[in-house]
Amino acid sequence: MLVNKTAKLLAVLSIITAPVCAQTQKTNKMEKRIINPWKWQEKHSFVQAVEVKHVESTLYISGQTAISADGISSNEDMESQLTLALKNLEKVIIDAGYEPNGIVRLNVYATEELGPHFKILQDWIAKYGVKQATTVLGVKSLYETLKVELEATVVK
Image 1 (cartoon, helix red, strand yellow):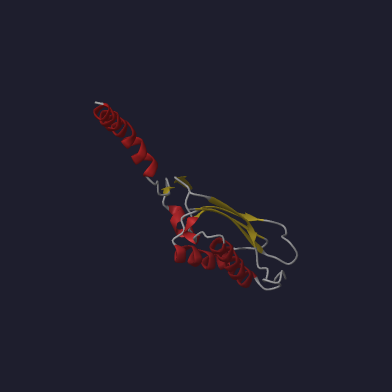
Image 2 (cartoon, rainbow, N blue to C red):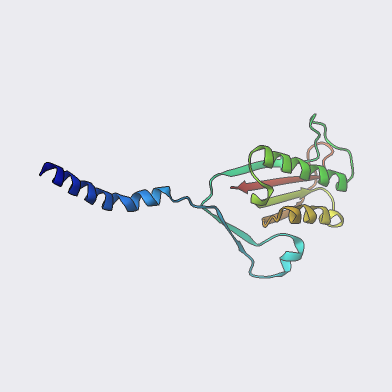
């Protein structure tokens, strides 16, 4: 009789706890939802907003610039500096265990007109399929001889 009661108790417990166990085993994959009330920004390689759900972790990246691995600021032109800043941004993202397509926010600070070199940024964004909210700011100066700085938030 004790065995019968124990079996019934175990059956009831399994019915009660099975849904809870199933919920705790369920893994939520990160979701990104792009919000674009208009279409004009698509030709500029950014979106109006990005909603992110079920994030495993977030990486906040300090402004990346055209500084060599030895810590020397570039004296080169805007095109060269933007290319190196993008390489440095990519390196930080990958070394941290993230992917460039996880960028959800990209702020660009430039001391001179970015327009003639914007295609470099657009091509890099397209290469990784990045859909990010972006702000581009003209600033009076950056550190030492630097002309462009890229600040990003990345999720996974």
